[in-house]
Image 1 (cartoon, one colour):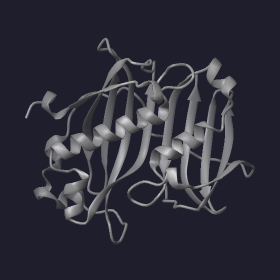
Image 2 (tube, helix red, strand yellow):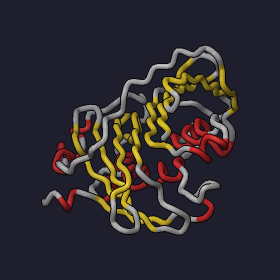
Image 3 (cartoon, one colour):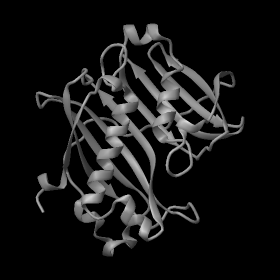
Image 4 (cartoon, one colour):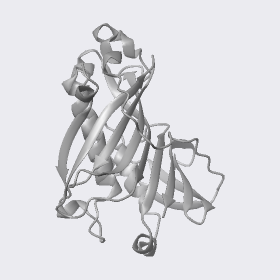
Length: 247
């Protein structure tokens, strides 16, 4: 198996209903394309959700970091490339490149995934499936961005509160990982998005939340362009943390 064959490549278009008021693809939609490409790539190699479900397992996204130089414009085609960087017993590192219509790489992403048992919700041994062959797909393609960082939030002042509703809930019955991204980006005023763009966006997923849960958002301004955000459910348990760097 060649290194090139280990990389999956998936085309997409920035549809008009997937862009913001600047005409650029939104971070939430880009996140969806990134996660979809991970799903396609895993399925083509025998490690997709359907295959895992047969053995009572599923994939869970633990961390995601996206760093961008540009974002596709309305109607522009773009491509998501993805490959597996490392496989450990309980989690795997998967990377991505965002390629514009001219073939230029305009961004990269890093992610960390765990395979969990659907009954216990605990991490399972990645080498327990298909004779441990998952490590055959490890690829040495470079990903020149920093790995997801440790995010800490000190603020005790709630910046916003929402209730998890119908449109937040995915097929697994809990709040969709992308919906957290969209809710977090809604914390900032329109003026900020008129003047600046998102350079880097990180998510660290800690726990699940469900329909009817009250989600509270806490934010630290680390620097004039850098923010750390923590999301808690029902005033107590942390469900995720995020870091945003504007430019």
